Length: 189
Image 1: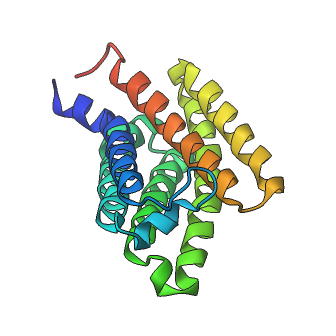
Image 2: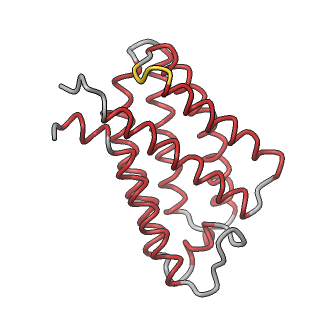
């Protein structure tokens, strides 16, 4: 497998790392109820080491995906560069949630909301870049548009634990589908 393919798969690897460590954290916290607790509740529980590590590892892998996987495929124009920058910012915000846990007070809430809202903008800009470059044919824009519409559809329901969980899984699905589709491209150097 080439280095390019590995970077293209970093979106998938990041999702797997997050989901695996999230499941470990859930298993270590008997009081955590899926969809009834905020995901960040795991960041201050018995499984905090797993949850917070999942955010950090996923963030690093998503930065690699942004800078060396998907980003270079989105063109050198303003939309491509903005896409890469916004994907990197999303990953940094994700990592900051694992650093500034609920114990950090209001900063955690600000960073969490910033992550979700900024990631919606990121998916929209990446969607535009995917449409413009056609690097994944119509599949890339279709997946991005679908995930964006789903994410926007969650906004009126507020920041409840279930909505947060659904939004995270929407982001994970987007990352996995785009990462795998990109890695499967036949013109891999």
